[in-house]
Image (tube, rainbow, N blue to C red; front, side, top):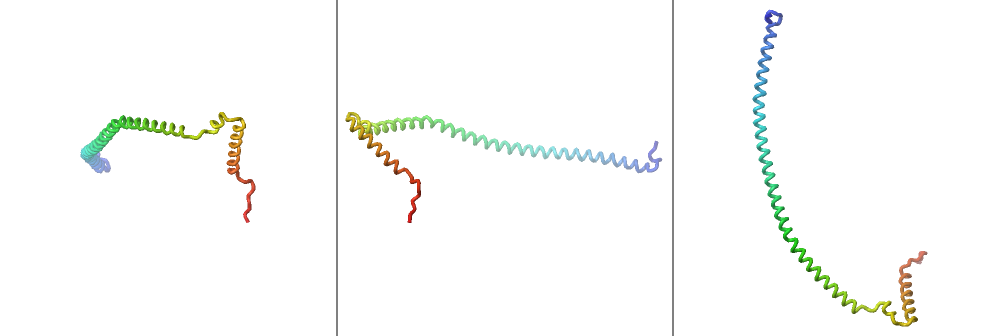
Length: 150
């Protein structure tokens, strides 16, 4: 069957030819653009890799520097611990000396003072303590009624 003999047959043939031409052009366009897209993707990938490698290099340098600093600090720790230990030993000796001196010079406490005295003197010492406590307790009390000042 010849499409030219049908009504509008030339038009259909022309449309089919144009469609196949457009399809060929479209495939060519896609192929070109795919190649261009791949080219840009490769460039971008290379740039990304370079930047990433640069950043990783900087990061590695920083980590290496921190590692060296930490190692130096770790070497110092035993020395500092020895200094601290010596300091604590000296301070302990000083505190013991001070305590010994204070215990020799300290006045006798009421309990030590009452030993060996008569029963009457012990009772009077106890009363003195009680009265002293009562005086200090009265100073701490607050009045229950407010005083008006005219």
